[in-house]
Length: 231
Image 1 (cartoon, helix red, strand yellow):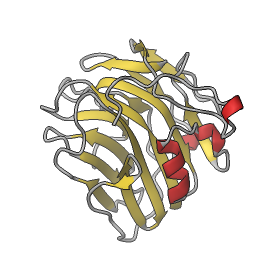
Image 2 (cartoon, rainbow, N blue to C red):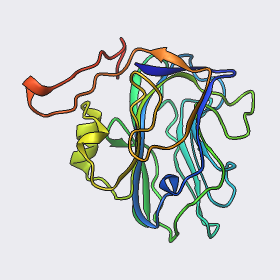
Image 3 (cartoon, rainbow, N blue to C red):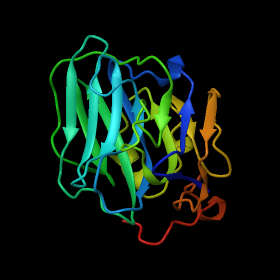
């Protein structure tokens, strides 16, 4: 099952750990989100470090449905990518992926680049404090995410377009183990599967999971039901 965040008080945290850092030169961060209400405010679903502060990475859906990544390196270089009005609509599963290759940062929705990219020079990101899933790290009452989250993971390498396409098609992140540094399936529990990292659940509950598989061989596939309205 996925995890449901109620938009006002429920979220998950992952305790600070070196595995959460985003290295200089290349990384991939991604997972599935399902927004329940039509966007009317900001909805933060990934928040590590104070928004736009040095050493931070925040992913959000804006009030106009834009998908946005606010990222700032340890050296203070800032990147903001995304900004396509109406990119995220209520009632659909979307695979979101933030990929860095060298200095090039892009955000993808269902395997397609969403909005602008940024290729200005920058370095690695090692935020302090816990990573928040389903809320902004300051727990601002108007920034909680309302919806479902599943299959979140981070690689210390830039995944290929073909690998991202496979993830969109339902491949489990575990199918790409090279440089996979953390992985939260959010299926039957909320445990992190690689390190394992310390995860705390603040009231999120189980909900329907997007369809995923763990093998390319049809007779070995273990599928999980995707909610109606998958995009």
